[in-house]
Amino acid sequence: MRHRSLLILTTVITTGALTLTACGSRDDKGGSDNSSGGTTVVIGVDAPLTGSLSALGQGIKNSVDLAVQTANKNKEVPGVTFKIEALDDQAVPATGKANATKLVGIKDVLGVVGPLNSGVSQSMQADFDKANLTQVSPANTNPSLSQGDNWGKGEFKRPFKTYFRTATTDVIQGKFAANYLFKDAGKKKVFVVNDKQTYGAGLAAIFSDEFKRLGGTVVGTDSVTVKETDFSSTANKIKGSGADSVYFGGQYPEGGLLSDQVKKAGAKIPTMGGDGIYDPEFIKASGEANDGDLATSVGFPVEKLPTAKKFIADYSAAGFKDPYAAYGGYSYDAAWSIIQAVKAVVAANDGKLPDDARAKVTEAMSSVSFEGVTGKVSFDQYGDTTNKQLTVYQVKNGAWVDVKSETFKD
Image 1 (tube, one colour):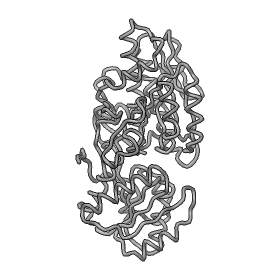
Image 2 (cartoon, rainbow, N blue to C red; image 1 turned 120 degrees about the vertical axis):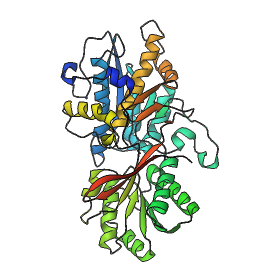
Image 3 (cartoon, helix red, strand yellow; image 1 turned 90 degrees about the vertical axis):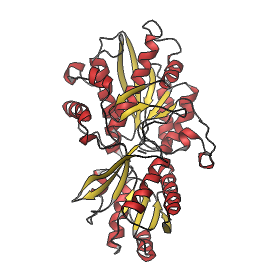
Image 4 (cartoon, rainbow, N blue to C red; image 1 turned 60 degrees about the vertical axis):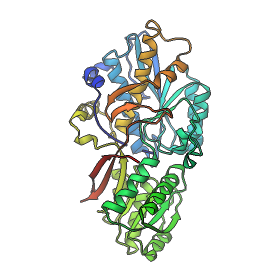
């Protein structure tokens, strides 16, 4: 997957002074009902809006909605009214593929924000590519999505020209986590667990390689199954291994339970994971106090940046029921990048959308560049974000607290 942060763009500061009530009422799909524009452009959203990961999915949808309201309020693209079409993938690849088909079939959809899960994205990319429909994920971190299956061998080939992301990859996140656990936390013997999913297994593998390269020891490995709740067998293996820490590649529902059961087994050691566990629900899932547990996440803490105050204030003013969560800032920026691409295409075609608008928007995405909620938003030759900022968070007194932020370099 991946989450959060950072500078409100000069563009957004200039254009983003919102009074959200002036944008009209939101329809049942989360879009803004604004009939003042002559042309409607739909931004699709695909995320888990129900189920165990809905806290993240709702934050994604709402943040895209906020970007759309901002664009309409300020007439960011003259003559164009933006709306959203939000679909629930339930974190299931097959459902994501069906949603991709549906979004491709809606002619006014010129870009899609999502999904949350790398595995879901794998099922959608080809359909979007065939339709020349831009996809920008605010959370995917698996490197193969943008750099091809052989990226680990140093062979980089972009599989789909329509795929972009505003979150950095697990190559960066996994190495960052290993460096912190080994050098800063002083842990030398880690037990690695993953949830057998694309995101979790990939992140755990990258972490393990870097941890061993630094001189640490992986004293054991195991895997758990998503949606199961009894991890006592794994917890006992961890206790018997002599590990001084656990690294978990997966999401917060399983991660929180694993942390809880490791501690109940008698191993009073920290569990660390990626942005998939960085959520208050991870803490709530554990009956044992899990102070000391760690998580990495992409970006810097949005709440601590003065330039992000407007995003936070406007989100609150919009009255959304759910928080923007881990990927809110990245989702806003993903939507804004599509809006900026549409703006460039319209400007280059005498103020109108061309007949091949989808293809033109995809082309324009490569040149998008602005200061966003999460910092500098631009994309490299693979469609990956150029923003390599990451943060380590630690559970202290029952809440996540940032303990180290840096721009990571290989």
